[in-house]
Image 1 (cartoon, helix red, strand yellow):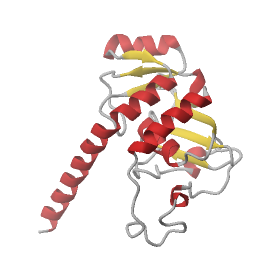
Image 2 (image 1 turned 30 degrees about the horizontal axis):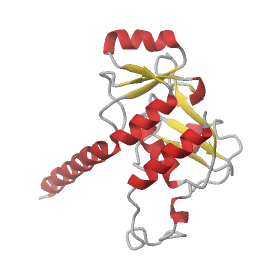
Image 3 (image 1 turned 90 degrees about the vertical axis):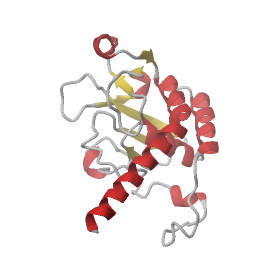
Image 4 (image 1 turned 120 degrees about the vertical axis):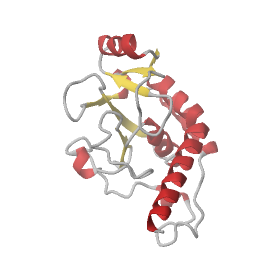
Length: 200
């Protein structure tokens, strides 16, 4: 992975990230500072070992990573803190909020694998397909990863999309962030509205 490119993309994401106010996050150590976004789990020198048990929920959206194993990702920072997220969308948030941490490894799933859950591989080795007509966590424009070019080609033949690499997929994620956040916010507001009507 080209670290300079990753840093540049993270800076772009930082400019777009919405930071919670101290009042909204009251009760957490480091409220009102960048420390409130530090991954809350203990340093982990082997984050891949039992990763779904150690990181069951995405810390940014709350989604179940086992349920979304086809899109989940895991980033391991240079200080051994790890972030297990549900998708490349939430990975982009993690990279933006942890701007002072250098990722020493990032893993993504092989969408074409038959194993359940999908195995995680280093993103530098993965092939990405952007915009296939397949569902994806947290984004309307899918960004699925594949261990082999053949696996990507089979899915592309059936579902379309444009091949890319991790850097291209991450850049597309940052570009899609505004529309995706607006869509997610509207969906959650509608869910809350229905829940309130159900109580009435």
